Length: 637
Image (tube, rainbow, N blue to C red):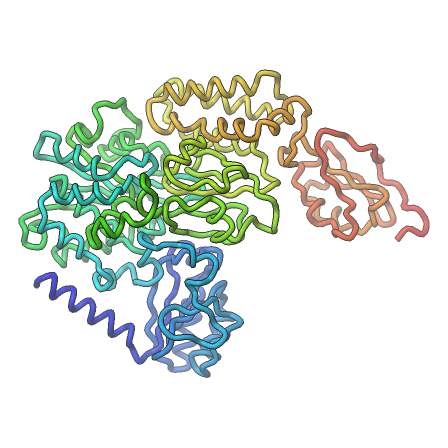
């Protein structure tokens, strides 16, 4: 069967679904949807449809990106647009079956918007909603639309046409296409992809390997997982394209075992590829042979570094090695090896499908294309987004993300995960691209973006991330092993109120030493959160060290909670909710907090009625309040 036959059959199947005279229901079935309760909703839906004897086509789809609205369910009735519903519950699902599927009331009060041609009164275009209208979805174009476990869905939307085109070209022509596109590696370093492929292709040796790095270990990052769960074939197609360009016959996907759904869908996808002749021996009758093995990682952060990753595949302890030689010359088992991350392989597939001219129209002169980000933290709309490189940080946070949670002030955004930097308000109008982030002291990384508000302490954030990288250090080289440990100790002292004169300078000196002396990228970037918070938030460090204050009221050892005697109403709410039983008092008694018992959890502050505001949180001072409960004055409310 030719590819034209395969594609015609896939398009026919897709069109039949799109034009079906049955109700179609799309269920968000990625990890985010499942964690939010999609399985319960699915069970309730199937039961309700069966009870009402309603015939419907149910399609599981990946994450469309609006994770804060999960669980997501979309409904399409014959001849009408697809309508999206968010924050679904089993009760709402039953209501929609009755109101919309049976009685044709689309419930505009529950709907997020519509997708596709046509309009429904009271329901707007879903892609004109604030979170989606500024995005450019290239890598994520299929996520939320196709069933990731059905190869025909991918083929019907242009999938594997890039591979077919590639197999008619010489390796040099394919590499030139990648070079012209301007694609840079999306794993963090941003090295030109075409040039990287060329190094490996030209390396001497008949046995070569390619690897997909899916060891996504950054706290708060889920870009790679979501892509693998929602559109695995895009990544796999990119790998087969790369194998032809480089001359490799064996590939590996290194994916952490904590991603069971991604691994399951990769296995299903590779089996389907073999049946269609896209993988294995004599691919598409061209004589090219290529096989893919899925290697499950144990979750070590350092295995995201390419040489440590290769050691793990070889069955060794995941530890980096010195370079040169670089993997393109001597990589896996000493053979020329090319490693790219999940998003880079998917980008290569779409470039070969649509051409370098089309792809290069997006982004900036030096940073072409789009980038996916996991937008998380203190932000209204959390989720997976894709934007053209060069969009400002302000546009991402406020236009797409809806601004800082609860209307609070923006404090900082960290890009690049635990190895990235914290960018302040002054950087909000800076473009998000490789050069601008590097100039600000941060990195693109694989695409984590954590938003922090006014209550976030930069010193505590630096302590948290250096603790993470210190714990994940493999310990092979001295600068990383000991340097990060010393930085952690100093930051812990500062947060505990025991900071000393000269600590800031020590952190800077050690940080620069770790950056320049570490063996791999983990150590070379580990000091970034510390150095950028010192660079942009030095006043916070000074307050912690010299005034023993935490301006953000976060560091527990530098804050105290008090009950103001003139405002306490003896309502017992704080006393009943205190988990440490640190609040003393009774009816008609002014309450007090036992400072020795207080764990600084803040529960009393949170539960005290705002109309009273009797509980206060202070730093660097001790209030003159009673140490023991005292009777309330007569007549006090």
